[in-house]
Length: 128
Length: 395
Image (cartoon, rainbow over all chains, first blue to last red; front, side):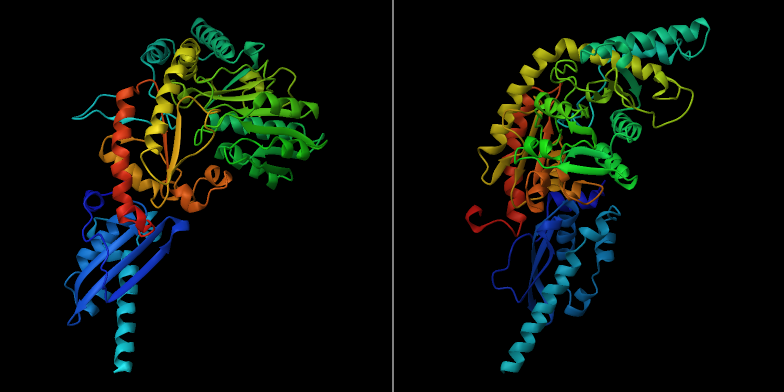
């Protein structure tokens, strides 16, 4: 059902965990539907210095979360915003069609974390 | 099931059973030399007809049918359920247009019932209690003069709960409706007596009792009014047209014979394994629960759920370890909906997503049970460590 790459990430997820002093946090999904992802990012000089995830969900949900963190780490904010559901799925060697919509949410969670970071930056500037 | 490097442990017997070697031996002649069509007059045809008749007698004995002729062979449980529901409701529509069923039925009962709604029938999906037992008061309240058919599962394979069929039968027959029982999961595991339990129609499946796939039967009590769903050459007393699947039917009969002989011992053995496995999957793990009835359940059924994690990831984790089981999670389903059976127990969708079903069978041993018991705490912990839903106290 799943590609070897998906199973690799499922078996050994990369960057699993939380960042307590994260610069941005984003959550997408809903436990009722069976998927919930939270991404934490740490940003330095406009680059994603560190990224971690927590995910409740199926094998695809866990593997896409792990893959997304790998793709995002070290990227600039602009580059990270270009990581899409499709590019995550491609990097994993494809996902079963039925999983493309429901479980491939990690890129959205990353974008939500970046937006949270940007919002916080804006607030900081306004305060300054 | 030969092992590769490590032993593979199959615990998904309600999804399908391996075919018993004796069954294969019994079938082989009918795939080779004895290929005749039972409708043919010549010797080869008559030999096939004799095999068909012998098989009917054996399958009839498994459920203590009044007569072998009450057995109609089909292509499996789905066809049997369709014939029972559509055939009985349609044939008796001059008497009434109401069908009662439960909310813990298989899709091959649910969807024919929905078809009947589109055909102008009224269908009530009766509630069950938190263990999955049918609400008998609601059944009695909904049964009226318009009700011609009540269809209730003998035991649902997802939760294992065995329904009180004898009591249900009394209530249904007091109102002169027909009782159909889907015994797909139960037949061959627990003794069923269609005379004593007073069942009018009973669905059976070969592949749930170590027979080949693609064959089953519908028992139809003499006097039950029913019409065929498929029209054709009039085989099976006109109720199931189409050339009979003789190799499959012979295999099914052999499987039924073995099931009858081994039932007492095997159900006792499986019940011990089942209880031990349930204990091992729940006691050492916090926020874990049993699905279905604690005692009124199929001997082979283990159904549990774990909070904060999702069933497909549990299945994948087990698969990596060579253990094959099943889940009622949405992610493990084609429909992307959590199991309607688990929701009918009153569970929230997020609880249903965390379900794990292990259905045991002839090849399972205490060693298999011990293996799963030893694997599960770590699997649950790993997935809970990943889950944002896990409460702090578990970390």
